Image (cartoon, rainbow over all chains, first blue to last red):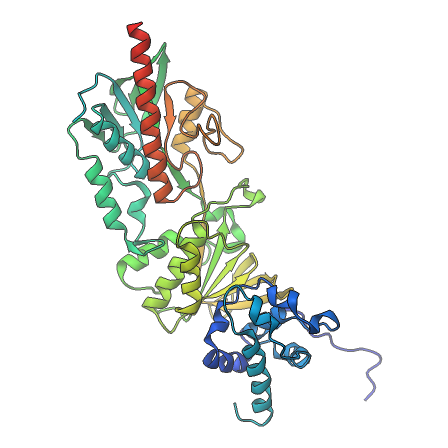
Amino acid sequence: MKNFGFSSIKPRVIDYDKNNRTVLDYIMEHEPSFALCIGCGGCAATCSAARFTDMSLRKINILLKRGENDEVRRLINKCMLCGKCTLVCPRGVNTRNVIFLTQQAFKKLDNYAV
Amino acid sequence: MPEKQDEHIVIVGAGTAGCTAAGQLAREGYRISLIEKESKPGGKVNNWYQLFPDRRKSEEVLKYLLGEIDNPLINISLNTDIDSIIKEKKKFLVTTTHGELLPADAILLATGFDLFNPERKEEYGYGIYDDVITSVELEDKFHSGAILTSKGVPPKRVGIVHCVGSRDEKVGNFHCSKVCCVTAVKQAIEIREMLPGTEVFCFYMDMRMFGPYYEELYREAQEKWGVNFIRGKVSEASENIEGRLLIKVEDTLAGRPLKMQVDLLVLMIGIENSLSGKRIAEDLDLKIGINGFFSVLDNHYGNNLSNMEGVFFAGTCTAAMNITDTISHARAAVVEIDSYLKSQKKEVEV
């Protein structure tokens, strides 16, 4: 079918009620310290991967909490699991484990296991 | 026991500051007239169910305040306002709305604060939608033992909006009301405690946890009670076809707008100088600061002093304060008044 050059634009607004937070639930179940994030960005500032990619753990944390999983999926594998973020977190969030669990959750989701 | 003093002090306002100062001054031997416009002493503490940061019952602090003013040297007049205050040389003549004439050697203004009227922020829908309520109305619900929406059911999701009437040029308030952030955290915990199945979201501009154990309470809210915090100022609330409230906010940490439905929206209303306080300021030519509160003589070492000799300040009529700081400020006012009256006495003797 011809589309005459038109395309639909995905709204930028985060629709909290429509979003799916299964990945978040999985993380919260296995790493409750995730609740303590205050979005300070210390993790993102020290991140080795962030020097060369658009990886930002601060952003991933927020997106996970809102259920904006597509963006998380795009970013999460840029992490090298070096764990520097965990060293600087002022709230004691086990950030390395959050990334690990996120990757795990996506894998399980793809295999319909979550 | 200190000897009885001749001087008479009029204290305006029998809230936290007024009761504290009255009690301490009476113990120093001064005679006190305590003027209160409401029908009972205790001021705004009467509004609260539990107090931050330790969630003790407000009745405990009320009991302390009432104990302070239980002194034969204190004469309290309830349901009474100030009609006029006239200064003649070093003395004052206070006329109450009941026509009483009270000569005074010093005046302590402990007139406190008024709560911001949220109808002025029309975009939040207070007075339009039944399920938009204030932080004080939520305390009433805690008192009643049940948190219900206008439909008579417990809310599945509650939104709490910080900074309503504070840090907002649009309503003429530049100042931070200081106590609302921690009140929001306290109330969020209380909701989660009473209704464990209810989600709670706090929408904040900055989390200002200035007092001892406030940050710890914030942490507890996240860790133990699962309260959610979203950084961004809610721009509007509207009702959808199902009668739920739809709120719009910029999720500033995500850098994207967010919309969400809630069943109850709680507005953390800020504090402003009281109208009755402002009237007295006008009457006595007392300076008002850009924040609308009484202007103190020195921000660092003279914050109980006014620009008029013999007129002193205690508590939230000078700035937003919590109960602890209000009590400290009122006790400091007692020291200032005592040394002022003693210096007056010396002048007379010389």
